[in-house]
Image (cartoon, rainbow, N blue to C red; front, side, top):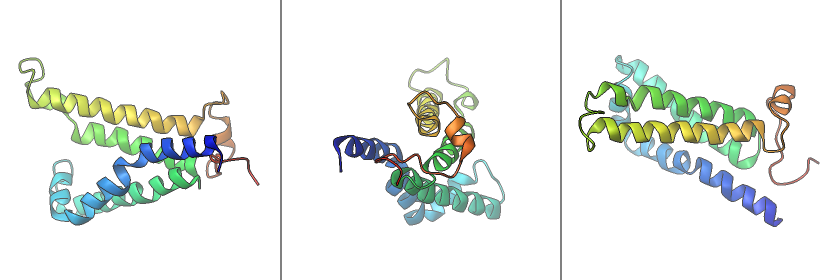
Length: 154
């Protein structure tokens, strides 16, 4: 494996490390707690469980896609949307009421988490559009194709 391929692998590993294994494993081992957290945004328990299982699937399968290069652009787009959605649903800094009044309050803490989620979404969008200046064309032409992050296509 070339140095460039190793660097690409390490960068992609850094992108998905939050989700696979950590967040996915946390959801599996602490399923009740995760359902409770999901119920903050989705009241009926059954809906919260369904949303949680969808999130778990996204974290596992899309992370593997980004890491392996299999349909990596489509997987990265899904993960970008997932990061943005979780920012809006669970990092609601504006709803705390203490953002402007308490520098150590929950609103400020959630604000930084909100921005981190959006930053991670942006990093996943870089996988979607690439860094070669081709924009969305390669993705739109073949959304489920590999971007061949570790070398030339066969």
